[in-house]
Length: 587
Image: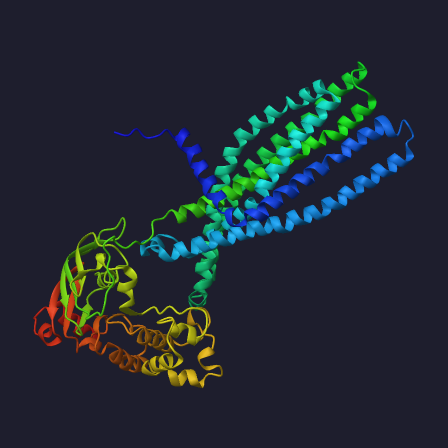
């Protein structure tokens, strides 16, 4: 039996894995990144010229009254500072562009990965939280990508360079000052972990606020209709309160870290003041060297301060990248190794002993056996929550079944490539989703390579062409977010036109007209009847008057098929569930 690795060993291994994956995003930008590091190196070297020139002036040029050399030294420093200005521009601009490029690639990878995740991922993750990971988290990652290597590189060069230079002035005094550095390392180590945990929690609450805002803004019309603005405010303030508390803990940890490390850096000045004064008193250092040492110690303190400030950015970036990796490591939908592509689909559908439950929930479907012949219309009716919609979702393999088999034309759907399967299935739902864009874009979503003539033909068959022609911009009219500028009937017709254009062999109508008024339903039903012609159709309906012509009707209750037959056959069953439901709808 394999012994699990102790937690204290897995954490560094995990961190190394994260760093390797993070570093891989530098590869496309390596040329600019190397130039950025070279520019940073020159900036560090130029930064060391001032104390060197200061030492030369105090110990040589000024005592010897070398006027021309003093002016020349000043001009050289000025020229170097001008060069440093251009180098800093390069680092600030192109360095940030490296970060932006990496951020864009991560966002592309994340978006592509999100498109491939299974339905149950979206059942358990709110849209606002996903958006937070794509925006706020990756922005912090971008900042770390730019400033991280730069700060570490410059600070490292400055610390090493300052040690070498200060040693040339006075080695014993330099060693005394540098002995304080381990104290800073110990303080940083103990404070960093608390900071990391606190900022991780704050990141989670930020995502929660985004989710709350996304939900409230999307449902603003419902909020206004029910005059529940105060309730939404209450829900928001709850998330906002969690964010404030998490931020308080994060900034408390950061303040502890910053104040403690700043105190240690202040000790450097105290050490120089006392030790340097004693060295000067004992004649072990000249006044010029002591003055230079005081000026030059900033060569060491400044990079230390930079590293301290960098820790917050590091925590934000690492936390953001960890959350990015968390989604990227979520398994995607995959076809089985033996997956085949469907050819011409006849449309035969068969359920054999199918049982299903969602994650961490009771069983939804129990031993379903059902067969639908090509071109037939099967209606599913029954109480809400009985499993009708779930049964429909299993046909396009939106969820994996726990037991049993679903076959299309005799082929197990688990052995059909998902793209091939779903291209042959059209779905019209009660809650129509339209993308923010034009009417043309939403219809063409059914088949992106369709011609203008094919698109218009689909719109005509869905009885929406005349309405589109009445608009000033016709098919190029914007419909607003989720089709807010359209009526319920118009949105439904648009979704039907989309399916006409797709031209699938199998059609699923899931409560397609239940949200419409009776007059609109009549017109929509005409379009749906034409859409169903020649296709294997599964209809989920509460209005039983719309499915009387179905070849067969199955009553689904409690996850099981409890009655089957034609409308006439089911109506003849005394005390039958279908007969009772039909009587209720006719009242």
